[in-house]
Length: 475
Image 1 (tube, rainbow, N blue to C red):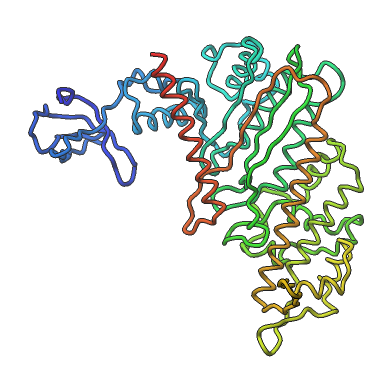
Image 2 (cartoon, helix red, strand yellow; image 1 turned 60 degrees about the horizontal axis):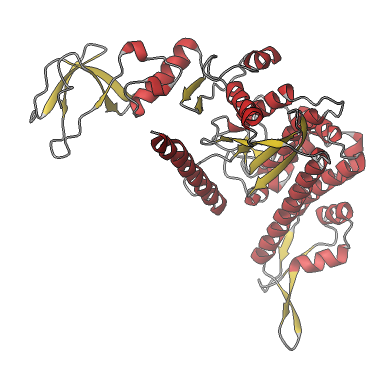
């Protein structure tokens, strides 16, 4: 109670500014119903105090501490103090990074900053974490150093809500390891580790309302090092791809980038066989409305995706197979299903060009496909029935097939990337980078989003117990 004297600075909640800072202009005595405050714009107000709970406002840190590059150096570490410190660092000094003990807090500036060049990597290499400005490279260097010094494997966990900048941070951490742990031989393994990013983003990232390049899967990359701490290989594990996006996108959202990249390149001579047109023409790529993203050239990105496949040693013929499967999914989404009069059965025209393209691209028999899209088999103990399906049932079955094909393709590509990154050399130690998908809450959450949010909550609890409980034990 005795802190609230005249001239004390405090934070009170504000509907517009979230937190507003004021100075007490009259000593507060226990039992007073309100605090007398003066705000920074010299307006005066009486702030009511809840006597039942005795909840008094948060105290403001002395100005000399504001702008500290480690939040643990602040006298008061509560929400308004943390937010104010991050805001001051960002707005006044253009610093996007701040430490909180061993944790690095990053603010997404939504623009490219010139703080990731090769010379910056060299500047952080070999330094102690507290000696330089906070940076993702400092965290990476700390992991590298501890691996070498303590002979212990390390992991970096990148978490935060959707659009916070996790994937970009994970990429910079990997770039740091690729630079400082460059292989002694000419195997170019570090180039391959970095080449996995554009591929995984093409097949696993999409535009959502929160983020133009949202990871719709989780990934954990283990980078392996030999006894001299040179990179010798890597391995990637993925978690829960959001399959429903293949057949459904909400307003203002897109399907996975790869579909748009391929449609944007459909007029290249080598893709004539795919029979693709622009993304607006396909049901599975046009549900969200606008099929483009400001500032993104899908055809240009497709070049990068193909180049990355080549770097990882995926043969031209295999690449073509991948693109055929992607195209076949788009054709599958455009099938015309006609209901029969009885409403319980339906058919697909033999002339349906999309069905023809689908069968041709995947090498399946046309008559069989046409039949089994509209019928299902029911097996009882005695005999087997073949039953027609209604339009809704056929649509559901078709969507399930599209999701299944895409998920199998995704897993095949991940497996292939892992083969390319695999090493027969003996791994001495590793550093893991976990890039989890972001926490998001929509008006209606899909089951997959529920699982994503649950995984984020579990990680947060892990983080809390790690940082706070272990700290307490140490004290």
